[in-house]
Amino acid sequence: MKNHKFVMAALLLAAFAAFGFAYCEPSAIYAIQPDNKKAYVCPPCSCDKDNEVFDKPGSCPTCGMALVEKGSAASRPGPPDVDRKKVAILIFDGVQIIDYTGPWEVFGQAGFEVFTIAQKPDPITTAFGMKVMPNRVFADNPKPDILLIPGGNVLAAQKDPQTLQWLRESAEKAEVVLSVCNGAYILAKAGLLNGLTATTTAPLIDGLAAAAPNIKVVHDKRYVDNGKVITSAGLSAGIDGSLHVISRLLGKGRAQAIALGMEYDWQPDAGFARAALADKRLRFALNGFARIPLNNAGGTERWESLYLIKGVSSMADAFEHINQTLATEGKWTRLTAVPANDMTSIWKFTDEDGRQWNGLLNIQPAIGDKDRLLVSLKIDLNGERLRATANAADPNKIVIKDAWIPEGPPSQKVAAAFLVIENQDAADISLLSVKTDAARAVELHKIETVDEVMKMRRLDLISVPAGSRAELQPAGLHLMLVGLSKPLRQGDEVSVTLQFSNSVQKTFRVPVKRRDTAAN
Image (cartoon, rainbow, N blue to C red; front, top):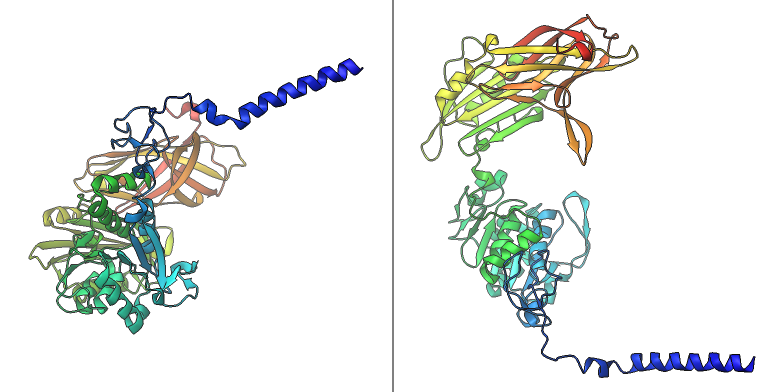
């Protein structure tokens, strides 16, 4: 037993000795490593190689930036501490969330010192009810390098003398002053836009010139750079404006890297500006109506809007009200009505640049819903194309083929319907709604595969471009008959009415078939 204890003690002492050497003398081990072994990393840019270590200099295989020595100032997030810019973001009750949080993300990714600032230290209630505590107050006098003025409910800030005074003093010492959305109105009230070119959010852009003298307002820019003062358009445009500031201060490559890290599609040369889109000629047309948007699409030279309106006394009254609005508020001139359809009117107007526009209004009942009307508004610089659309309501140019409904079990309360729609006309159309006496409702559906799972999505409409066809087939587009009035058996026929955007209604009978005989 004594020998056994002696052996165990000796083994433990040997183990402690080995551990103590390894633990207490690491410097002796590292001392024999070569001291000229260097490691290299990509400068932090939010690409997927930021945490990878390279054994020799070169370029990052992802972003292309030159690798820097690990541990150097260039390898740390953002610029060296001595060069960090201070970014002050004004916040106030009703401030728009994305107006300040989007730019915060950009400047934060750049390594700048970002903070919110308010007149008082009290909690701020943003748009949509977010509660925010300001980081600083005006009295702190932080002297920011970059001053950001977001939009939102700016009325109180525009009228507050202390806010405007702080803004003027801070702007005088700042390197950059950037407004987002209708934050430009605060700059205007502070006198910081006099003599400059500016922009703001699309719905409020026409009123900016009245907010202060000598402002040249532009509609076709996502942001406008005057040197010190930069104004950006609405909401997400603040991200673009902030990336532009980073591009000026740190280089375009750094701004591109930040945008990639944010997964933001930054295209400063793309020319997209919300206020330049043609729908600004239509926004007032349905004032006074409760409406549901079904489709809004186009560009700077054409636009199509489709709405459901509800709560109207009659279709004729709604038609005349919209026509009157186009004439008085839009200064449109009504041309001769289309003889084939007394609920269609053709218009023309001349814009501020002297360009001749043409417009088309059509209103029709929504089948299956007596309390709602379908209103279509189209404008285009190409008048002939709209005239063709107005006169294209020829039912014979919409051809329905291969319609069938699969037979289901007697207990089934829903059924799908399949068919092919051929548009043989020169004008685009859309299938808007469907009605049948065999079901409580008919919905437009599409089956999609998401994460390897098939899901059914309801659609507002099915587009059928000119000269094309829409195939409503199993595992794709289809009609869904909801709430069947009786079981559907092979040999039955179901009467169905399709309603299209050009006022055409097509009624036809659809046979019920077993799936194994549907191809016959």
